Length: 474
Image (spheres, rainbow, N blue to C red):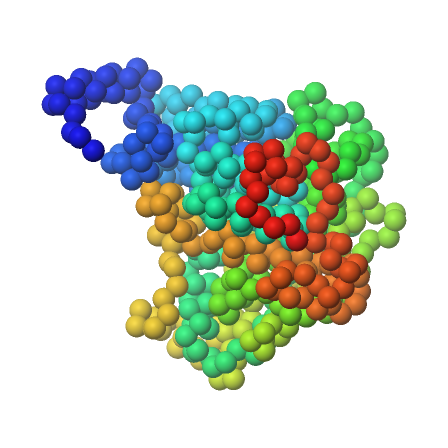
């Protein structure tokens, strides 16, 4: 590229410096103008979804890195929550960069996707919105961080992975265990054969309680409830179907099948992801599913599964059992020993249920030396997030235009395994799955790979409206 004359460069620097002083913080120039690796570039980020995970985890995860990125806009279909998020971000920057930073608050996220100055989005919405927003954001040229689970259906997940690959968006999902030291240690040891050939994995997850208030209520004035329902069926409003109007407690939508599959995807997406990473099955999945579960009776408004046991068989001979009867964590058993890894009883957020599960150690093994062993000389080295920081890993991936610790395909395959378990729970019979074609040998089960979309909402509707055709529906 030709070099600008020195006088013009000086004029540009003067103008840029004057503009920066006028607005009170360093100039933010979109990557579309200078390129993501430009010196001093601040990544402009927008937050979509301002509930408990957004305000407690995802926004703080970026706010602590003001030298790399700035949150410049927020959006939530509940405008009250968007307003609170705006105040949180502005207060954080007033403290960290000692300047007033104006943050735009929107009720409709589409204003964010239409803004060419925004480089990336964080999506912390209810589960039923994840896939559509990732598709729309990637097709709008944004990099994406999304909370797990990736999708409401396996069909949606395949579309999301295809879009991300086609658009080369830098992607991260909220599987933060991949950025935690003991989980990386466990996966690296298993990958390198430290306990021999793996034959059994046991995963312990919690359950969600039944109950809930089904009384129809007036929609709050600040809440665009019809849009919030998105691609799912239109039903009357009650607070226990959505989120609390006071505070950021655990929302009712997590416990309704209209919006998700319950703990099998909610917590399962964390631990199954670790199992797949350790087994090197991130682009595959199980061959058979044996699942059983209890479901609430009709007296309960909330209807996701209760107690459960799932057995998944993989092509490598591993049998993975997932149950609420096990301690929360992942247990790998091989021919020469075992490894246990967990969060040491920690919940995702303070409002997460633990179902009375025992708290296990963060890391344990049949060979205690593995807990402190130097792994730097092992043949297989897994990705290690900088400073064990999941959000920082994403930000640095954006700057370097490289993969983060998670990929769209890995996230899809993790979510698929959890959704396969959910389908098995509902049908109550053994199922066979082909990870290559992503189909069952069971016509009724194949009907559950997708859900109808309520137009104009939905990931597939969004892809079609954008003219994206580089995918094959399941």
